[in-house]
Image (cartoon, rainbow over all chains, first blue to last red; front, side, top):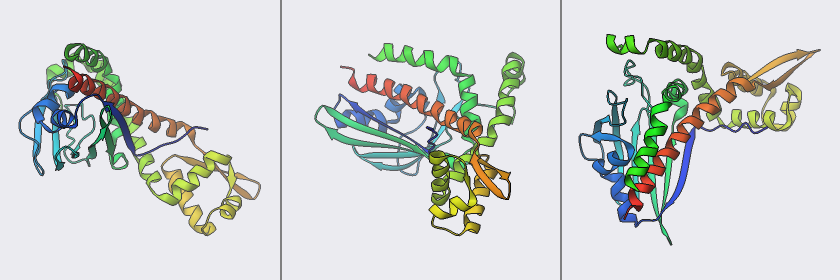
Amino acid sequence: MSMTITDRIEKTVTLRAPRSRVWRAIASAEEFGAWFGVKLDGAFAEGATVRGKITHPGYEHLTLEMLVETVEPERYFAFRWHPYAIDAGVDYSKEPMTLVEFRLDEANSGTVLTIVESGFERVPVARRAEAFRMNDGGWTEQAKNIERHVS
Amino acid sequence: MEGGPSRRRTSSAMSRNRSAAAVKLVEAAPIFAALVDGTRLRLFARLCAVGPLSIVRFSEGAGGTRQAITKHLHALADAGLVHDNRRGRERIWELETRRLERARRCLEQISDQWDVAITRLKAFVEAP
């Protein structure tokens, strides 16, 4: 029976771009916003809280909030957020946050990026994930649009 | 805080669906919490691997008193992960797969969203 379960999500991808380029795309709030789909109001710095409106059509009424925890240039970036806090009618501010970590490593062909999101055991994330899925029509389509746009 | 009246009017059907989902899925959070404990995770993994077990069989293979194991199994049961049945004089513990499957699907959805975001990041940094 394949019933594995975990409180973390881990992704590894090799990007055909130098580490400095990948770092900028992640650690510059403006560039992060460009691919993630959020217009952030400040720079990423340790201890900073950065907020911004989601830019995906249909989700502009939502505000994303990120608490920047660690910035180690060209190596490691970590922040906390409320995963998929997509219901504008719900106040998520009292709920625990998940930790999102980006780790960069050199590779022959470019940069190996590892993304880990952890801490789901403390978050009623299931409810949010389900709400997200129910509204998913927009996101998946929009992702394809952005991909076409930037490539 | 509630959404504005116009928002409610335009999406009342969706809100109803979403509320139903919220009631159903808020239950899934304790599943993650219950499995964070190493001993519980091992007990749970054993049920996954070998199927239904009596408390006696459980105690044989696990390093712990029958009482301690029973306590952990009850914690897993509270999270809706396992349940027990009386068979003669014994209690047999087995997986409660339905809720577990639901929790797994929730994480999968978030995982899928990361895949989408990574695809966008890849296009973004690899663009000439």
